[in-house]
Length: 325
Image 1: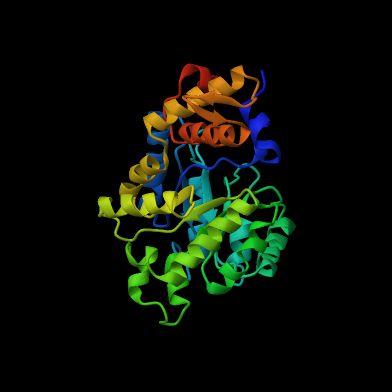
Image 2: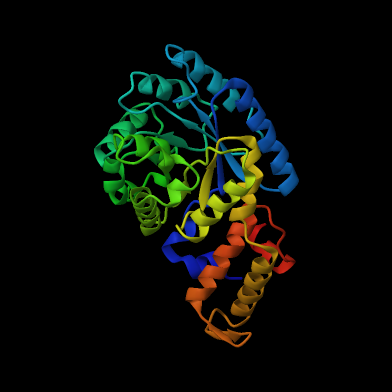
């Protein structure tokens, strides 16, 4: 039986399929709660529906970076089976970066699901960080990159092109402040970040760069974490208007909303399953479904809908579930 991924995705068949939500936490009690919630939702949905990123950059108190990294290492040793937990290190030019690498990426039995590198402005900085990691023996850890400045956005395509990179994230707060007051504070809010031209341009550039190289674009935070309606509206805009397939959470209450928004609806899953079933029965040749012509271009779209459904714990018809067993 030919697998749809092999037939339809070609060279991208092996691309990383990341959970649609990336939850950040840096305070000990919240990190522990995040890991507990990740395990609970994995059991509820039958899949790891969100990543946890343990934060050594903003989470570590000044002067306490080494102790915080040691804490994060101990938490990595308690990750549930099948769950994905990454770490955000300090920036490559920070005095704690090499110590973070030594503590978190050289333990013989602990390997983060990914490393988030913040404050990467140029391909040269990315290469510098990877050289330190490689020297420590961390050659195989997937890399996520946080773009937080106009210069970083300028280099987005070059950064996305690196084979070790699997995701790009947009750092809204730092991006706005990097403009020295040229973007008003409203640009950091839930409305302004979708209205100010420089912010919108940067988001689109990052998304385009990620998709150009088969990487995952991850949307920025919504700081109004208790406003569920605002979060849902922002997530819908990020998904439907800006091409993002993943989004940051900074509060546990945001996780379910993000997963729900980025998941296909029941109707979308049923439609995609029907079209893929018809495509397979016709050996992936062009065919009509409900009066519309479909070929491999549209089959690819509907197969990716089913992949997203699986990532988000949506129930799949039995004939489609077999492809994910």
